[in-house]
Image 1 (tube, rainbow over the protein chains, first blue to last red):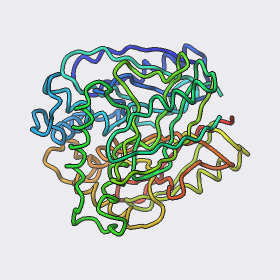
Image 2: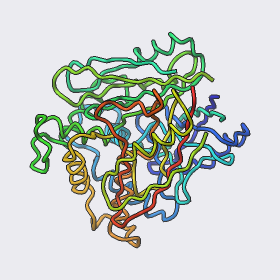
Image 3: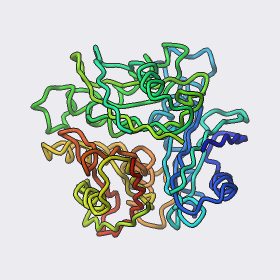
Image 4: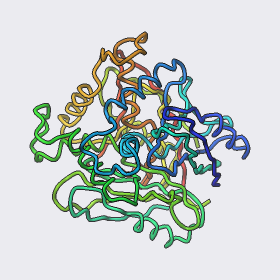
Length: 136
Length: 136
Length: 136
């Protein structure tokens, strides 16, 4: 089944959405199956990363900002602001869709994993997710 | 069910295959479900990107060509031509498989999203896709 | 259905796990369907790459090591060793989850494709995979 889910990303960076997705799974009483999380945007991403030390997320953000800086003279797509073309590049280097098994009524993540919406634009942005939930 | 689909990529760059995949979904009369698009090659990719301003695709192509240039002295796998090893690297940085929900008889893409075959080799190349379609 | 699978990665690099996954599929007598391979870790990856010339894997490893070196002064997450933060970055640039169609009792890979566990840490490490197998 399909469930729509909107997330407000308050600023650029990694925002933990694990609880939002687990709530959708629990609401459908699915013990075991597959959850596909699909992001309907091309200037933000999905990623699964370490949920322990917040310095990991800070370093990821800084590293990717250095690899894909704003105001690179290579860019010709500039009319949507200096953070737009870098956001598209960051999107292609990361993920738009993630398929995650469901076990015991929730995402079968590892102990140190969480699911993040990685917002690449600066202003607060509402992002639309489409979840496909499949029951075994 | 499984459907095979061949796409001719006329040159390096992003080629919109949204209509090809939607035609396969419509042909099976699937209202709601999940479509997995799998590319059987390691020197091309799949990506979902902005379908509006073509400058986005041009900039993506130029940026990735700069990050992964031909004739890098690091490469030892050179016998298949100067565009082969860069193509493998570009493939690992992007996607080989994409799972996309199906809604209203087509891919549940956002307003500004299209699905692209990202060809990394120069000559015209026929690429094989395997689609897995699942009906809810 | 869900199957757990543990892989021992003896060192950093690409380790072919195609036979392990195909054995799990064969054990369930699935002719056609979808296999989702999910890695429960954030310092290793999954990738599908060329299975022919081993120089491709060597070049991939060397290229990614150069792009994401150890001891970069940008890193603040350093307490788990010099190979830890680079491993997290390598993970976000590659894949944690791969959905692959099943055909003729095995992964529907192309002729030159194999599925690899890409270990980014140096010491031998046991990695947990969760497979979701769906029968058509």
